[in-house]
Image (cartoon, rainbow, N blue to C red; front, side, top):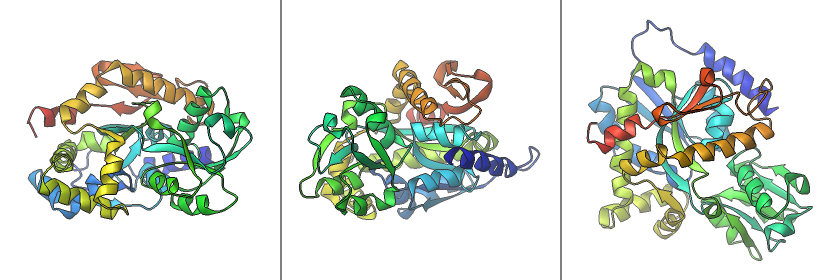
Length: 352
């Protein structure tokens, strides 16, 4: 069903592409969902940082919250948004696999404990054999589970996946018949408080593999690169506040925490489980490293094995992934996901 939805969305997106002779687009909209690594976007909008940078480049940028993570990506894929907050795997399996050329414009962080497996019955990953596990199917939670099972000598055939929306995850875990969930913060922090629960595994065991991005439509970005410059300016100005140890930083983090359903202490705890690329040079170095190529090879292998690269995909090479320096994984003639450090480099060099 997901694959047919992706195909339909790709057709919808294609119908919305503007003709080449049209004037450069000036009005843009990005979608976000609640997650510690993405809370700078709504804060920047509320604080006037989005408007400041948009005005600098003579454009308009709207920042919109979507309550359901997968739905936000589906809407981006359908052409409703010009950009969306998402992970590296979901960027590959939904828009890219659906034919929507997507650029990872901002590589903000990687999960270093923000994604995890929590159980009310099992005391170790090995104990999960035969259990039903609630998660957002075919998301990074599913990938995390697969990696955890692999490390415990188990396979997915040894468990049963129960597809559950992130919006319903906490309520599901409170139900007596739900024993184990895989989720991300702030939901992860909440399910951990359930009496009798045990944290079995988290993303700190696979560092650098669950990467949090702002993905934007590549054609939209090419049409008006000022969109990318403004977004990079917004992001790094806001991140400077996130890491500020003074009162301004505390105020900003408290506001982000409140907007994500927690407080300053809760938000700081989530940040501690995040490898945040606070300075653009750090993000550039990560994107230009050989490690990200290795990670995306793991991710595309998982994705192909689960049928996430489309019905027509004959191998994991079906969807090309581009990297800095002209490196490519998969079909170089069908690159649909690009890790492009260009705009982060402009920020690092003070050229925005």
